[in-house]
Length: 364
Image 1 (tube, rainbow, N blue to C red):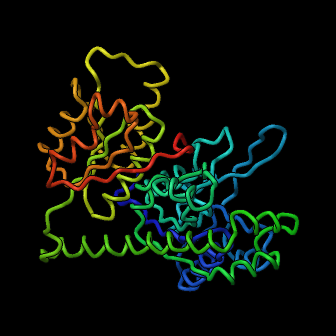
Image 2: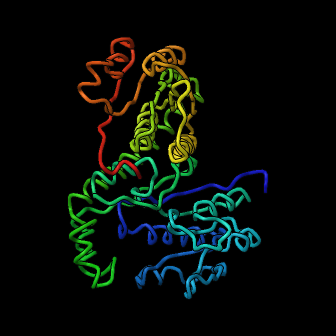
Image 3: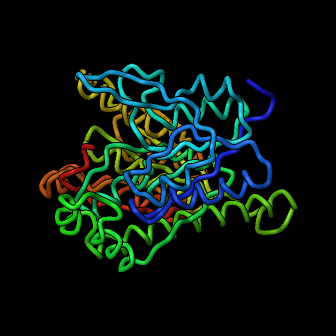
């Protein structure tokens, strides 16, 4: 590992086909013409002639060949990239899942190792693959995206460039066969590439890019001791339990904290003497891992009253926003035992409370 970590530039798009790879290669050509040492680690042309033409003239690091279930696949050869040690390397599709037998399970992990070696990386990413947006994308499209990139990876990017295309232009490109083969076009148009989906995903991509600009401005103002940069940071508290929606709460809490440019804690309250099943323990660990991937602090509390413990912790930690799920108690249970949410709202009047709706697909 060299002393200085490699830079990361991400070409971000709303959906496939907006031209991220083409834009990346176009920039790479300009760098090459200026004499910069830039190579191809892996490019997915998807059979598009214009994209394939742009790869000509670049040095291509040989890909790693792997056999899996009787077929041959090609992945980024991380070791070969590091051995060649160019100034810049292009690696397409950051969210890709590597074939079993590769050193890393995910392509973003290969990119991180390459950056650790002091090599700059240019890559591409669709907004639906950003982990914290997983629930939002499902609500928009009805599709649960399984390949995701942790937000902290995107957050470490030195530059995020939005590659934008109007919904009508994208749909025309799809109909011409510029994105998928002819047999896949009708299904794409009636599912993921419906105009409403594209509009909403485009808005997400614009928001994510705007957040990056806001964060850079905030860091600049802090570094230059400007007034807005010294404002008190918000503190978000996410309350999770054993229900499947806990992961959704963590993602929502992270998004809120990021927009507020604050920190967030994830809290679970154990009841004394209560034992968890193996499945419940695994569920909690997966929730904790997700929270830590987002840079959150995980806290386990213990007490007979969930509400009391949350109120106490919120008061001591300087919490400004509490994120909770809808109550799992029935109306009768709330009458007999009281509502946790109502109790917290009554006793934390200086704290904003956000109650997140439950849904059938929150287990993912």
